[in-house]
Amino acid sequence: MSTRTLIQGGLVITAADETHADVLIEDGRIAAVAAHASTVAQGWTADRVIDATDRYVIPGGVDAHTHMELPFGGTFASDTFETGTRAAAWGGTTTIVDFAVQSQGQALRAGLDAWYAKADGQCAIDYGFHMILSDVNEGSLKEMDRLVEEGITSFKLFMAYPGVFYSDDGQILRAMQRAESNGGLIMMHAENGIAIDVLVEQALARGESDPRYHGEVRKALLEAEATHRAIQLARVAGAPLYVVHVSAEEALAELATARDKGLPVFGETCPQYLFLSTDNLAEPDFEGAKYVCSTPLRPREHQAALWRGLRTNDLQVVSTDHCPFCFTGQKELGRGDFSKIPNGLPGVENRMDLLHQAVVDGHITRRRWIEIACATPARMFGLYPKKGTLAPGADADVVIYDPHAEQIVSAETHHMNVDYSAYEGKRLTGQVQTVLSRGELVIDQRKFTGRAGHGSYVPRATCQYLG
Image: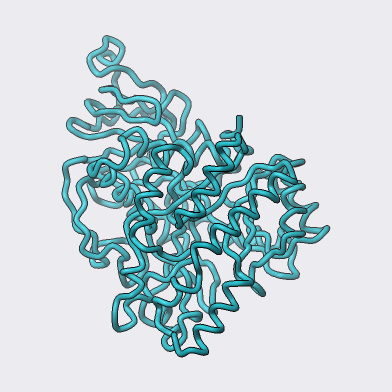
């Protein structure tokens, strides 16, 4: 049965423009967008009318970097696909791209099938997958071609975590060469893990075991060095490169230099690097463990460079790298040895609101907010214009956003399955009111009305951001 929803009276914001317009939704898709006072909009009728007066009407967020149920450091990320996608919806995100993991000695297919099984029937919003390559060999290189055909069009490699995910320069080059031929996009965790392991060992030998030393050993220079090396390898392979979770001014400078040469090199940062710092890692009584992630939080002075990079488009995307571990029982595994603290922060619910606060604070414009959180991640990972915009034919992933609502971020009120908030007590202006996923109400006036299993797996095209 055909259903029509009409969203009236709001300010429609996309990456391209802002207009006072009404949005007509039919059968899960955007049917039309027309100026509020136009004769076209006046003639529309619908089964359900949503009043968006004094609200923004924006595309659902696309979080292109999440880790639900990720095994790490002897434990698992505390959000399941069910709890994590529900929390994402509360925060105005309607699509995630999570990471399927190839285990050492296993085929890519085995890892991908395991992630299909974890997510199937569990997600409240739509989802896709990247593939983590942790064992680059002739077999896995051949499998890359088949995965691209299947809609898994991006592959993550690690220059960090020797013995777990690490690939050496030769393996990285081979994977990049394969991506150049099959159209895949290589995503890089750029930190010199071999050198970092030396510094970790030396710090622990000196008795430096507190969480703050996690930030001190994972030096910004080693992020910059690895970023530089990844760029040069990509140039040799003739392949595009996407560097994940850029945290340091020096690493960003490497990206900017490459982009000034016209190279297809892209960068992502995350809210934690824009709003948190080494001050958090240094919190007493092991509280700093809550903020252990890699790349690590940096001294506060790096934030200005990252905001500037977002304004100049040297950084194109803000994703969360959502990978939550509870403080009690999980982060505590690293008491007495910072290297055993599971790496990751919760954030999938906070991203859209934090970036709206950045609009309020004057760091970015409203359209740039939508560009870095919705449109560009969709284009970068082959989901546009199905996702990331409000235009006829797009999926009706729509957020009604109250730019004047005030909220205080707290673990007591968030919906992520984790016992702390990285932004506890932070005051924000702006809040998600209503969320539609493919035309279905998932959040209705701050009430969850969605369900596990509504979310569909979305195969992706190759990167649409090139050229």
